Image (cartoon, rainbow, N blue to C red; front, side, top):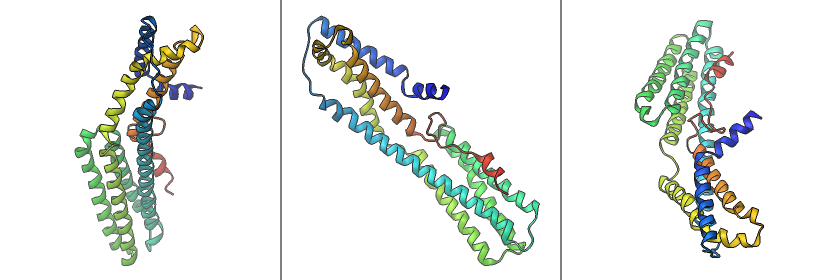
Amino acid sequence: MLKSVKRIGLIINYKTFIVLVLSVLSTYLCNYYNITADFPLTLISTAIIFPIVFSIGGAYKRREVALDQYGNIKAYGRALFFAVKHWLPETSDEIQEEVKKHLIHLLGSCRSSFTEPLDNLPQNEIGIYESFDELSMFIKKLRGLGLPSGEASRANQFLSKMMVSFEKIKHIYQYRTPRTLRTYSQIFIIVLPIIYGPYFAEAAKEYSVYLTYAMPILFSVILVSLDNIQMHLENPFDQVGEDDVEFNVEKFIANLK
């Protein structure tokens, strides 16, 4: 129940009520002064619905790519752990704990970099590159512990693929869906419900007096809710929305056995 209330709160917020009040006020004034018009509803779908749905689709695809690349980092990290556990002639708890320590540093640095504001990225990503450097030196150390050259080369390939995945996630974090399109949608979400006051006043003539403001209320809630959904998908790392990417570092490390 609490989760459902929280989800509703994510899509219906103060902006919803602001647009709702403006559209109802516009409808009231048009009704009072008998200003009516039969505007085409296709304008709303063309000016708002299509751009928002396009943005939601783009933001969702970015989130899916981020999940895929984050999964790659964890998968190749697990592969490095298994290399230490199974490929060495003689492994030990100490060397296994050492690779875990490097993976904690890497994934923890990723979490800090992507969940904090974008302005902090140049400073935070230094820790990530230090983690990659430590893992590279660790693989070199494994050669001295008897890891065959072919297996060491494969371990370096795991590290290389982890770095590629990180760079892809970083670009998703840095570059969002078109900002100009989002600005355009936000302007029309506020303007159109007000402009459509004459249409709502005209349409209300066919309904009961108690339903006069049903249409402006529904239009406002629907349009602003779609915009809020897009906003929460826009940054899949901010840990605010229900669909964000979660960096479960502690759980991942605990399952390395």
